[in-house]
Image (cartoon, rainbow, N blue to C red; front, side):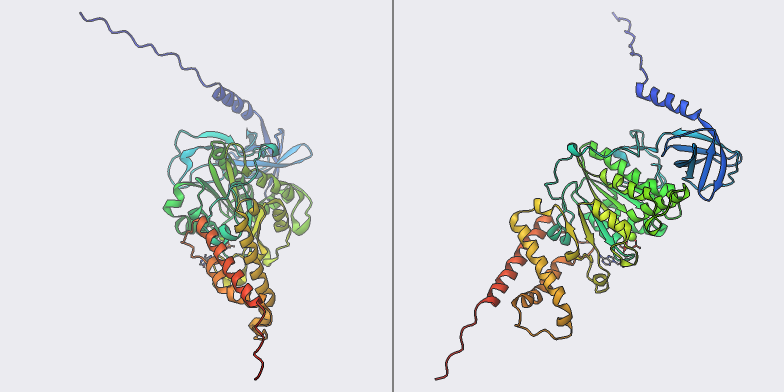
Length: 467
Ligand SMILES: Nc1ncnc2c1ncn2[C@@H]1O[C@H](COP(=O)(O)OP(=O)(O)OP(=O)(O)O)[C@@H](O)[C@H]1O
Ligand SMILES: [Mg+2]
């Protein structure tokens, strides 16, 4: 006997309370409306509404598509907005609407391998997948008590760094160099050589051509697979360039919260500071050193403090700093150097000699390296550094032939060790060296140098007496 089929019961699917809250929130926010009062350069003053600093609004000219803009300051109580997209035909009296209290974007694992803009929108021609969750681009840095110490090395694959300036999981370093010295190429080497499992790259204010070049040459298909690239080229409005660095940081934070070891690369933090300089001045802030308004110096620590290690995961970050006129003491490099746990200085003279990557070891430092390597390796790096400094100090004499071999055993050792040290430090951009090999090589070099110095220091046997 056939029994009638039992109808399948489907429990009612209740909407997610968070989705309801968000929809209601955006409904309420969208009712907050004002009008353009004035437009001065990149600053749009709005009347009839208020919005918090950093909020995102929509400028709605009647005959053009709406444009996103960010609140960058206030003129008395009236918000001043900076457009985040190219703006056309905006006039006083045009409508303005509040969109969200801060910039938000959708993030998740499926962003790996993708190229997006500062809003999190894809610019590689493919749609985003549905598994992404919305997060705010602005978030507070982790509490200082929620930050375990940096005690484990992270392989970069670059011998000069792994051997001489060992970088730790969760460390934040700056790469300081003048234009065209090799910052981006070094970042490319890091993306290929690192053992981090997620990479987030912010390209802030780069030329359009450089983005393609970086993607194809430096990153390659294999590198892109575990990377998210956030791009805001130099032709984009300042508010969008600025946001690219926040957006990349927010993506790295999401991966860190999921327990990943993230490598965050920001190229460059100088262009981030320059974007904020434009916005700060447009909002009426006074210019201070080199025209940078105070908000720039307030924003830099907020950016770099968001990286680092937490109890869940880690963000190891490299920020490139463009040193104008190779002046290492200009205000942005000075400030950034003080905020980070280490700096890698690239030297134009080394690049001219074809010494790549042009890392100036004596000028660079990793402030936590001594906690990351064995005491023997640390002693070896100090020893090699000493020989390099010794050579530099006597270089002028040596190059004009005024140094007489045998007059100082330390200089003789430095001269003898120069080529083997350079062999360790020079590396082809496509070569990756495991960190253990780099550290073994530095120890071997140190042993060889110590043996050579000991031999030179041995008292000379007295000359035989004439019969
Ligand atoms: N490791 C390397 N091996 C060989 N050549 C290199 C290396 N690094 C840099 N170069 C040379 O230097 C040029 C500039 O390098 P790169 O674009 O990395 O510099 P940058 O400091 O990022 O420049 P910018 O300031 O314009 O952003 C490259 O086009 C290449 O010719
Ligand atoms: Mg570059």
